[in-house]
Image (cartoon, rainbow, N blue to C red):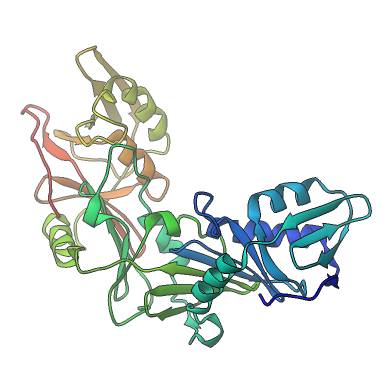
Length: 375
């Protein structure tokens, strides 16, 4: 990122490869912060940094300087030439194909120095890389809860890594996935929002100071700032999971394949609570003969849908009351489940994975129970 001489020409780059590189590092920008809304050309790297997330992607341009990301990406995608030539002077970086020239003003030197300092503090070149544990890529998506506008979860926010376990909770659900081995001897916590931007296959991992780093085999390094674990109630979350969970010898049931359509029908009359992911919003499920019945009911009326159910069926007389949105989400992972012996949760299971959802379980002849949890 050193200042280059007047009229310096960078390397010629294939336009599609440059667009791909820019697209990869864009999640590391912050449109609302001056300087962090930029792409850093660092000779053999493209970099972005936004205080809690940084992307570094290796591509040779021979150019050093910092320019706005949004305009660079938009114009490049509309240019038509196959090859991009760089022309750099004191105040700008120009990108030119056979028909179009894009000239972008370089970021002021004080902002450049700030970015240089921040990126250098990651010490990417000297990281001690280790193989990423088997199961990380598979288990992480299971623990990334979608959050509604009305579900601030404060100290429970994020995904926590404890030994081999990946853990997440929002006070109504707990996900636990076990990797083949641990990443770190000490627990660490990462932002759900940052993790949701990881869309590459990574093979190596490193942790240094307050940063968690991942490296892919196609020359991408993503650095995610860790969050404090002190306020996160790890022990209590695990305790609740053990209290409400069921043993390995508990019977496993399996919901039928077309349950999602019935959930959507029941949601029409069930989802009238406070906010999209309100735990007070529930539907009821129970078995009658060879059918699963799904009901949505509120002060407007009720709807009941019947589905043939022949595999892994519940005993008759048990009714489950559960959030339809939570249920629909987990069905994308597994349909197999157990009933909590406390009658306050349903535990969905898959290899190395358990997902507990608070629910009411009662006899079809009794009144509904109220359940809640404070982790």
